[in-house]
Length: 171
Image 1 (spheres, rainbow, N blue to C red):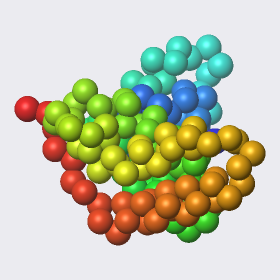
Image 2: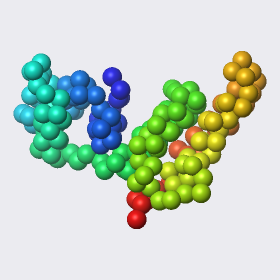
Image 3: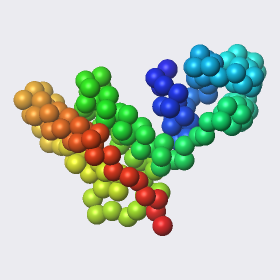
């Protein structure tokens, strides 16, 4: 499963990153949280012959009936950025893996963000980008350098969590 909460799944869905085979799990989460929408219940046990796009459309309809909205792309990206940074800050995700995941999200919305001087600046991650790429500045077996960059990256991730910068669409 690629998500741990309904909000994370909705953010992934908003970025077209929620695998269609995880829609039933999301439906189960909604049902377990008290959702009584029949269309959501139907998604918990889809027909094997259901076309993936039909399942996505049915999920959109079930979400609307449940009164839930799918976040726009920038809101979804911001939510995932903060969530991943929080997981790293709490020790649940390694700084390097966190930075990679955040960069992947950034690349999906990069064209929708304002022009920037530094890569990642408009997404509030320019320091993280620089630190992520600095892992390539030393041999992979240089444990001391790796730990130093890990510490610096963790500090940048904690700063990201505590200073949540808003995203503005390009335009």
